[in-house]
Amino acid sequence: MFKIESMAGNSFGKLFKLTTFGESHGPAIGGILDGCPAGLQLDLEAIQTELNRRKPGQSAIVTQRKEPDTVEFLSGIFEGKTTGTPIGFMIRNANQKSKDYSHIKDTYRPSHADYTYDEKYGFRDYRGGGRSSARETASRVVAGAIAKQLLNKIDFYAYTASVGNIKLDKSPHEIDFSLIESNPVRCPDKASAAKMEAYIKEIRKAGDTVGGTVQCVIKNVPKGLGEPVFDKLHAELGKAMLSINAVKGFEYGSGFEGTKMKGSEHNDLFNSDGSTKTNLSGGVQGGISNGMDIYFNVAFKPVATIMQNQETINAEGQTVEMQGKGRHDPCVVPRAVPIVEAMAALVIADFWLQNKISKL
Image (cartoon, rainbow, N blue to C red; front, side):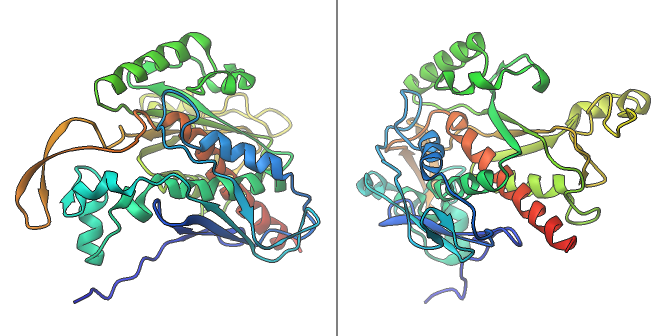
């Protein structure tokens, strides 16, 4: 007996639209990017560089799954330029260890998608989480790298702002973005990065995991992106970020801190050129970009797989004990940095194209 359910929601965007496919332990993952204008000269090395920022095994504080994560383009590019047709691409899986997951074939890992997938579909690929694995995000990074090249005058900077209780004590306008890639944590502050790295190693040694936050700043955003009702720019950014594995929160501009302020303190007063003296709005007012920097925070939970014994249930509803196996990140935040940038670029590219078409 099977359930009449299929997996929807594999596509993101309206005009600049990405559809991803593949599972963590299948032959490959990949995507189809539709809506990219023709004639865009692509820097394929830059795309691969973005993938390398996300790939596993890149440092001692991430999962040691060894994947080259080399992107292969199948369509939509000729002589280095986009043709305007769908851009198909694939990333082969080269280092699966499916046997590491045989112990959860009929057991539900706490805080994973195992139970909900079984309840919805009546069937699941338990090898590495299948479609629910964060490995799917590699396809997003490829598409986001193309979006960045389309939006070559707009800059996207994401970085680790906290790990556990260790926080980067700097506001977005104080950050030296050139330091983001100077350490494996991707925190643009040497002292904070060292503390974060040491803590992640301590957590890993204990067989546990820890969460944190990624902050993102988007500079040189043109005015007028976004729609004022349901398709607000910040709402789409929120959806994009909350679609990333392990994300538990999103706030932009003053966020929750703004609730502690009075209106006289929170209002962004204008300069004569339309810019604002402060930017507590986070670059978005009425759902539309105002030309100021867009900045937001994304909260990531601790990775759910821990190397400790936990009580759970199996498919028969029986209480059992299990321990995580396999290769997992003790903290997902450092590898999430390029994913946050990619999803931000996809959102901005989609609205940018919508604006172009509306002005024809």
